[in-house]
Image (tube, rainbow, N blue to C red; front, side, top):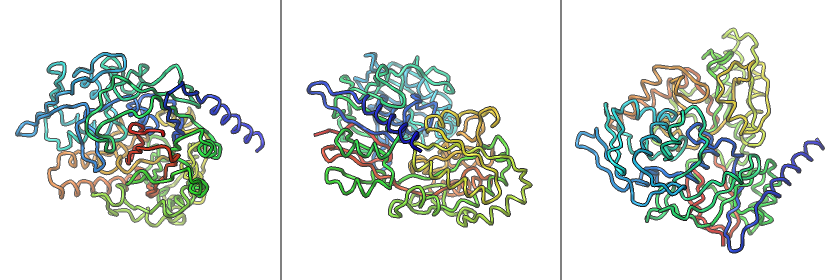
Amino acid sequence: MMNRNWMRLGLATTALALMAPAASGETVLRVIPHADLKNLDPIWTTAYISRNHGYMIYDTLFSMDESFTPQPQMVDSWTVSEDGMVYTFTLRDGLLFHDGSPVTSEDVVASLNRWGQRDGMGQQLYSNMGSLESVDEKTVVLTLETPFGLVIEALGKISSNVPFIMPKEVAMTDPFEQITDYTGSGPFVFQDDEWVPGSQVVYTRFEDYAPRSEPASAASGGKVAGVDKVIWTYFPDQNTAMNALMAGEIDFFESPSNDLMPILSSNPDIVVEVNDPLGNIGFARFNHLHAPFDDPAVRRAAIMAMKQEDYLAAAIGDSQFWMTCYSVYPCGTPYATETNSEAIMTGSVEAAKEALAATGYDGTAVVLMQPTDVPVLSAFSLVTADKLRAAGFEVEVQAMDWATLTSRRALRDPVAEGGWNMFHTWWIGADVIDPMAIAFSGDPDAGWFGWPTDEELETARAAFSRATSAEAKLAHAVKAQERLWEIGASGELGQFFVPVAYRSNVKGLIKSPVQFFWNITVE
């Protein structure tokens, strides 16, 4: 125990030592991000820390405002043909990449083509698309082959994977390989030479960025960099992170653990508030490729043991920050339904034990990846380990940091060769608001980690994307949920809200499911 404490202290001391001093007259926003940034390609991974990095340095054609309505961002104007099959987009004047080159329609086409192979909504868009063409330097024409009612919503989606615009030569990278050039199109520039994985990420204001004139609203509007530099400093220890915030060495703490809230709230110089109106959805993900979770009956048995109250009480604590939700879509959103949710509503270890015995489970160990540096997910992992063991599973918990987990979960290798059986994560509510979410894919080739295979699910998702009435969309959303439960795709662990904490001299925070760092000033 003493050795572990000294190791944590050493890591925290290293993080503090790496905090770059501000130059004379330079304004700096110092941030503790929710996780360490190791994967820099927000198309290759759905990890939220990589998405947040993407928003720092890239821009998008459209973006969601606070009412989840897509607004033009890099697009100046667009038209839609009378039959709804041809979209013509014209880019704004003054759009530049960080190397000074102009953003052109060819960059847009290449970027969207790469994104469309990895993102769930992008995959649906491309399955209905006939062509995407660069007409001239500022004009892109998208022609549908079959009707698709979510074109603008797809291009303006707020979270993973976000269709960020990269230079053409970067966007030509195989979508299943990570990019190595981080030339962006957004309000901040990534300083590659100052990046220290495990400790620090540095961004500087892009002086030639041309923000929109509209006020900031969630991901939309004017992305005005209010500081010269943003520094993310990663602390593996929550108490050290809290002390750095309270001492004024840090300005913004993105994801403090809930047990720190009473201390933070009692400090008059600290503001604690919930920034995301939809909250997060806890998620237990199975690997469908390998035993024992290659059997849907075994997956369903595991889900039966997952009582949401136990997870939320252990991981979140204070009940004001969580609620049970027996829908795969966030409660309080248009498609939320408890259809076919009886197993998850019961949360019975005894029922799970009986169901598992009926499958003929042979004792194959479940390798469960536990991200020890993310308190919520670490707690979820331990609760699952206890419940699965009580239900009759053999469980091997393997501890690692989140960055390692996000790399390892991409491996389809057998468990004995470095693969995995299960991990936990959360999705922001905006990411799983309808069946288009990559989390709900039933396509094993283009789908999300875990790789379920289910044609009925894919049929329901495709039908949702083509539906033109609210009633039809709801019917297809319900069908998708039914199939997700029937195949035991994942476990749903409830809906929760994680407050942010920041010093009172930080102004301009944007209310959004995603944490943005433009529009913020430090007084």
